[in-house]
Length: 370
Ligand SMILES: [Zn+2]
Ligand SMILES: [Zn+2]
Image (cartoon, rainbow, N blue to C red; front, side, top):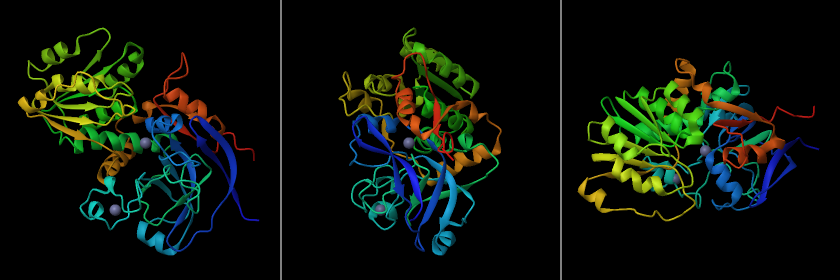
């Protein structure tokens, strides 16, 4: 009998079950990761509810941090890591050869048939362990890994994922630099990460919006470097942004709010002439009411869609975490055992009355029987 691993398997919308699955053999090109922590992403909630279509059954979890448990010689040489080392694992598993990959845009690689990345590959595709809601996860030969220091708490190191998104969405894509006013719509983990990244890029003024119930997140946004925080239920955001920017509007608007498409239409009003708007919050494929496209024309706005993170932005995030100058760990609020995966997702999705999470992790070691 070979080894087995516990894994959360999703079999349909809102249906998760804890299963015991065989641990696969590793060849020369691949590896096996012992998951220390898996960050819980906003898109995990969309997978869970079925808004984001996935082929079931599959193992969720695409923000893995872990220890190399076994690795083939070729993989060890290619990735520059060995057994016992800690790695941050990128979500997407690019083919490395298609036009998108060769052109440096592996986020839109379709070379392996559809979107190919951890938590999106079904259990039926060998060797099955394609998600990090598990004790062990398979590492495909085309995986992108980043070595990380082992002396940081796993839940802090696991922040490489939201923080990587902050660097890509708030800095890399809109080319944010000194002097820019950055307006961040939504104070969740990606919004807060955007504050850290924009501050690191030298942004002049950072404004964050949220709801009245987001008061604690908005307070944290200030602590992490926001100059102004606005409660959209109490304040006229358009007027306040005009006041703060001397009538110009924001050079960069980062839309990372969840569910409601309204902020997408509003972003066009908040942006300065020639401004850049990054859309990264998904809205369950709903249409945007009151979207006035003429504003894009007359203001020469740049609308940028953001999907995923690039290696340079992951590296910027890892450097920021390892440098320890910014209290990134304040974003981390919860660690959960595998058995509590459903509660963890519902909490992030705002489905648990009276409780909120910002960054949370599944930590397989918690609640392990032996
Ligand atoms: Zn994610
Ligand atoms: Zn490709």
